[in-house]
Every structure is written in structure tokens, then in C-alpha cells.
Image (tube, helix red, strand yellow):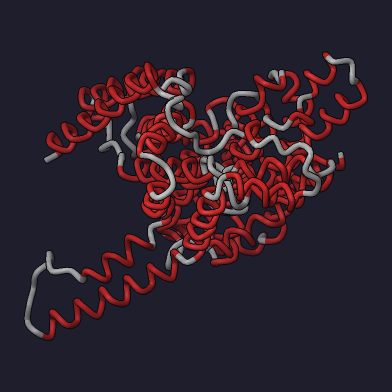
Length: 518
């Protein structure tokens, strides 16, 4: 059975690889069809005054703008209702099982159709993919088929690299050699605090996010979430503490990647265009991000200080001898780290990422005595979530770009953080990079030095807001779905959007203060 599963997986990935090579050769918008989304420069609405006037004009110019945004809003509302669908699924499933038992029927394959449908609708990772169906159907009434396929070809070449990368890096980072290596490294820090629940909690929530600046945020999220599950969540903290930790993790990961210019997706979108290198990022973002992470984590540690004693008692009661874990040969761990490095190095080139992953799968088969089965289901669902979010989010530039360009520095920071909660933060910064008023380099070259200085402040505000708001919702930052997928089982009824928002609110305010006031 495992062989069959590997063959199927190999076939799927080979198809992705072939498609990537084909799209790279001929992807992009075809000139024979109208473009969706309509390019911002084609609106020619510079003379229209007022934000509302500009938005109304853009809806008139392309009515699909309004349709795509309404569908996107419905998809977001669906994410807030996911737990309700899951509760219905469990209720109807239990009722169906009771009905079968009363009839004396014992058949595991006899399931409730409506319960399964509700369970599917309650899967957060599937929601944006589900809402692609009405999006495509609506587009078919307004555009020729060639326009729609051209849009997806464009996304495949220019946007889908991130979901493919997240799938691969999440699968590699969750393997036994990587986890054992990460746990051993963090254990050295945790042992300073005697290796108790508090020291592990503190180490994971501070060290892992900062590591994200070098191994990328998705990898850091995967490792941190898996270790938190083992060293914290399995001891069953109170719901309020569980959500506080989840929110803190998401916020810390979102800002922890800003020490460099290549690890955080929202920074990656603008670093090249705005000329930001590793030195610039460290001095203008990294220092304040690290300070904010430490302060926010300490604040939560003080708020929940009494909970740690109870969790430590639970840990000691079910203590497991970590030393009994079978050691993994160093050369296998080093090889896994090399595969991770290759994936990070080629993250903008999906064919090379997927090709490397195929070799990685072959390596895990050859060394299966020191491996667990590669978990591909969760990474694929996360990748599906991100691909759906990107497909919807890329159609929102018609209103996001003018909203951003109409705001001053502080309102822009707040607006960017708020918009991030309802759209991927990388999309926010990418759209900001298209706004002429934000391009400090162009303005400086034109001799408009005063405007260039203002543009630099606006650049800082929009990126700071995007990374600060990256923990408020599961859709706010690309690695968040990975964290939710791993930790969802520790929350009764699944992770709720309100619980995550409340857990992330205090760290968001603290880190926002560090970015804008210090």
C-alpha cells in the first residue's frame, strides 16, 4: 500500500513539474484576450478625485471587480463559520452511527453523506478552493475561456511558487531527522531553565521565529508548531492560554522573518524593487522585531505564570524518557538539512523545488529505518489553501492599491495591518510596491528628494503593518495555515477565528509599538 501511495505521489509531483516547465515556456497573459485582473495602469483614473469615486469608476470599467470581491468576502466569512460546519458534521455523523447501531448494521463504509459534506465545508484548508468554483463560473459569464486560462497560467508562473515551496518545505521540516535535530538544538537553550514546560515554551516562541529569518518562515512555523505540540500543548493548557500561545506564535513568526530580506514573503515582494538588503532589514526591522518578540513573550509569560506550575505537574506525571529515542546517523540529518537548503535556495523556481523533493522522497525510502512516513496530506492541504487565497487575493488589487495610496504614514500602518487580517500580507506589500508614491528610488532619481523621504516612511509603514498584522487570522500570513494544520487537534472543536484574533491582539499591539514608536 505504501508503494502505491508513493507511486501516486510521484505521478502527481511529476505532473506538477511538467506543468511548471510548460508554463515557464509560455505562461503569462495572452495578448489575444482581455486581462483579468485589469492592469492598474489601464484604468487611467488619475484625474478622478476621492477614493469612492475611483472605486465606482473601476467597477464600471470592469464589473468583474465587484463580483470577485464579493466572492472573496463570502470566502472569508466562510472561514469564520468553519467550526459551525464541523459541529454539524460531528452531530449528524453521531446520529447516523446511532441509527445504524439501532438497526444492527455494522459497516464502517456506511457514512452520512450530509455529515461528510459538512466536514468538507468545515475544513479551513479547503475553503478558498471551494470558492474558486463560483469564481470561475462567474468569470465564464463575463470572459472568454482563454482569458480565464491565461489568468491561471500567469498565476502558475508568477504566484504559485510560494504554495509549492510551502508544501515541500513543510514536508521536509516535519521529518524525524529535522525534528530531532531541531529539538536537540533548542534543548540546549531550554536546559538553561532546567528543561521544564516554561523554558521549552519560552525557547520555542523566541528562538524558532528568529530562526525563520534564515530557514524561512514556513519551515520555522512547522518546526515550532510540532515542538509546541510535544512540549506544551500535549499537557492540555487552559483554552485561554492555548489560544494566547497560538496567537503569540503566529505574530512572532510573522515578524521574526524580518531580520533578512529573503525569508518573509511580504518582505520578499518588495526587497528587490525598493533596494532593501540584509543590512537595511536588520537595522530598520530586525532589531525592533526581535525586541518586540522578547517583550510580547515575556508579557504572556507573566500573565500566565501560574499556569506553568500546573502544566509542569502534568508533564512530570506523564514523563517520557527522551534519551530512549533512537539516534539518527549524522550523515542522514546533514543530508536532510542540505535538501532544506536546496529548497530555500530555489524557492522561486518550482521545477527545481519539485525536482529536489522527488530526490528527497527517494532518499527517505533508501533510509527508511531512520524515517517516519513522509506526511504529505497536511502540506498538500496547506498548499491548496494558499493557492486558493492567492487566486482570490490577486483579483483584489483594484481596491487595495488606491486604499493604500490614500493613507498617511500612521493610518497606512494601521490600514496595512488591518487589510493583512483579511488578505495575505505578501499581497498587501506587493500591491504597495506598485503604488508610484511609494517608490522612493524613482522619486530620488527624479530629484524629488522631499517626496523620496516621505516615500521611505510610507514603505516602512506598509511593510511594518503587514508583518505586524500577520498573526491576527489564519489567512494573514503564508505559514499560518501550516501552524493551524499541525495544532488544530489540540483545540476542542478546532481553532476558532475569534480565539486566534484575541490571542494575537496583545502581541500585535506590542510589536506595532516597537516598529512605529521606537
